[in-house]
Image 1 (tube, rainbow, N blue to C red):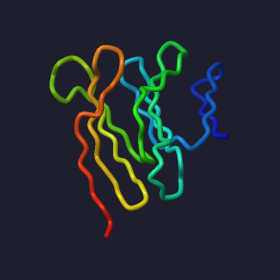
Image 2 (image 1 turned 135 degrees about the vertical axis):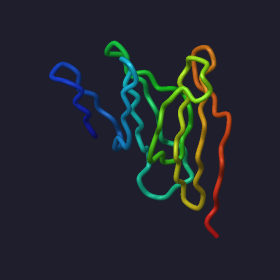
Image 3 (image 1 turned 30 degrees about the horizontal axis):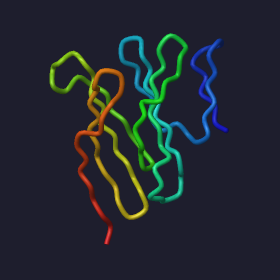
Amino acid sequence: MYQLNINSDIKLTFDSPIVSSVLIDSTLYVTEIGIMNPSEIPKGVIYSLDSDTLVPLGIELHSPVYSEINDLNGDGENEIIICEFGHLTGSLSLLVKNEETYDKKCSWYSRVV
């Protein structure tokens, strides 16, 4: 178990290491790697923490190692760019918000030969 201490009142526990945390306005985005060893099993998760509530964004991720959050298209909603690493593949993914959740709109893949 891995613990992230936000402050003296908020301590969060995760099954795998946290590889990225980004604070945007009052929302903290936390990225959990999932499986550390090279794997094609999507166990990584990105969460948002707002008002003491941790919410998974509902996207399957292959060992995410870095996340960047910003309003890339100027629509007032933050998009998320995630670098993922699998066993023989890796990807750079763009997550776009739709109403309540995020959708993986683009992924650029690379494969090790």
